[in-house]
Length: 158
Image (cartoon, rainbow, N blue to C red):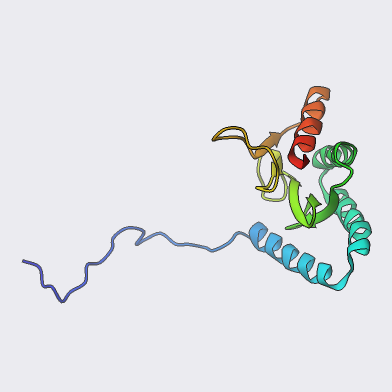
């Protein structure tokens, strides 16, 4: 019989090391902290103007393929939902309603993935039964994709 005073030693994960957050994740957290600091310093009218310039600056930093998609998405989102306010969110272009992010674009390069994504937050009105997509992988944008994105953004806001 085992000695009741000795604790059981766990063997799971014993030789596994956890390196913490990746460099990309740490950079995104630093971006978010800077965004919160900057947002606290400016008013709501200035935030809309500054947010747009920050989004355009982030888009300009992207690799050519992601930049082209991000520029097109920016135009589609602004045309589909002009009430959304462009802003950055974890260093990514995002679009908010009443201060809450509704959708965002994540460059493939941001987290070194094989495709970019268009994501929707829980504030987006995309509920469809008990299960629905919240992120869409993008490798390029066709006219049909652009129309679908425009409709999704309108639905997300409405």
